[in-house]
Length: 203
Image (cartoon, rainbow, N blue to C red; front, side):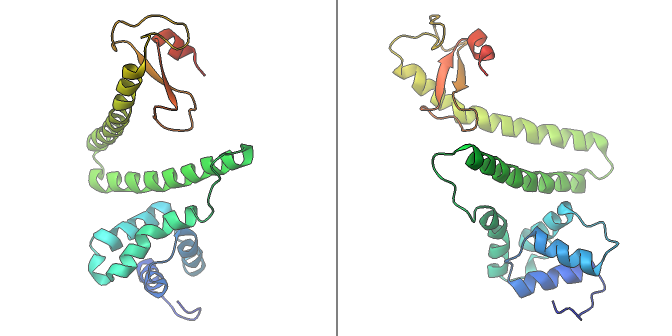
């Protein structure tokens, strides 16, 4: 990746960067080189996501060693988590945690959107159906995660009643699970069972 070396295409440049760094490279570094050598390029994150995917498990995977592909797979996460967050988060640390989640989420979304566009092309109906399918499966994942937590909370309750207003429950039907701390997930420690009106009134 010498400064005097010339590249006919962005693909040649990106492949050279990946090889020379042995896959230990991220979006910012690649983008800097692309912008410098191809200033008129419309390069963006979705392009880098595409190169990473195709290099690791797509049509270009045969051009790179397993080590390069493994490094490429983990480097983004390693860069994001290069600072360990404290267990108890103050205001500043909480913002850092939010920024990390946003960064990872944006990376995932960029890749998913790119792949949806690759498969859907100009078929808007197909794009809509794929979007809905992905959304529905992610929602089902969350439901599967909280279902056993809800059951464990129910089984541990001596008095089957809403934790806020005290309304008695006859069964789990209509009982809703509420996360006390909305920034963390569904765990027994972080959740409580409420009636629907109380759950809707919670912040």
